[in-house]
Length: 76
Image (cartoon, rainbow, N blue to C red):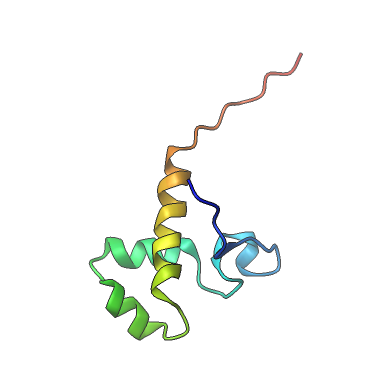
């Protein structure tokens, strides 16, 4: 996977959730809009300060994150 340059994490912005370029637009919001049938042009019209590349990177991040496996640590 190529490096993600548009996804940011800041505990002071949206509680540290992954956001688009430090703005108050979360990856989850973008994924939710796409899942509900919105198109990329729909999203760009609703959020004119976003770029098409922001949406693609949010989807890439979400896909990568869904493949991640969390393994519990066992105390010795």
